[in-house]
Length: 356
Image (tube, helix red, strand yellow):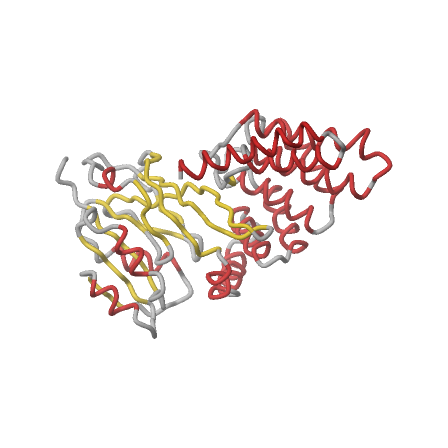
């Protein structure tokens, strides 16, 4: 159906700093804009109206799905695109106009920007954000589309930027998500997805020991087929390392080895863990642990980038692994190899920058 219509549906509070960027990015590819304001005290409402949005008001009740569903109830189009004010449409504008008549749940690539070791990193998260009319949400926080009709999921070639994990965005949301996640876990004790999300929230604010505990509980309750499992394992390895719990990290890496043969993130995290272990045990480092580090980063390069894996960090299958190998070779006296991998890292970084 060439004339299928699509609405941008948003819930917003005090999004004046970023809302115009979001609304500008979808101009010409949506038929209506629905903005549900949950209590803004800045210029959010005026900005939304300037872009022709229908603005509705909703009293916040500590429940994201309640707000999402209220916003969706105002949409009149065949399809709904769900974005937040700290999102913007980077690519896929034409595909939005070709969704057709057959209903499905559309997953799009959310490209999260965040700071790590003083540099901006990116990870790709596949999230259901294209909904046929009538689809609703469930969940107090990190809400999920309810697929009561048994519709197929479909990944779409649509890329959306997100900078809410950058320092200024994190400061604005500090404490809010943790409180809601703890409320949700009181309602659904032991839910592995909520435990994963709470661990993720704690890790963002560098509470790595607490985060590790929640991640390990989530691992116990989750299964290999869970969509969040890849990110859960990688974050667990990282937070255990950051918390100094290297023995647990190594045990987890060993237990998960067979599950991630094609994940550069897995081998990158393994290399990080064993590098810390080598520093802690210098007598055995060169003979036992640094070879594991080296082979793991080489494996990253062999696999290459995997943006199709949930929250795979860009560069772990290319320039970040090459950079780390260059440093390893430099520090172990292999100067020619170090120079070779420095050049490879530069080339890979240039290729990836051009692609994005």
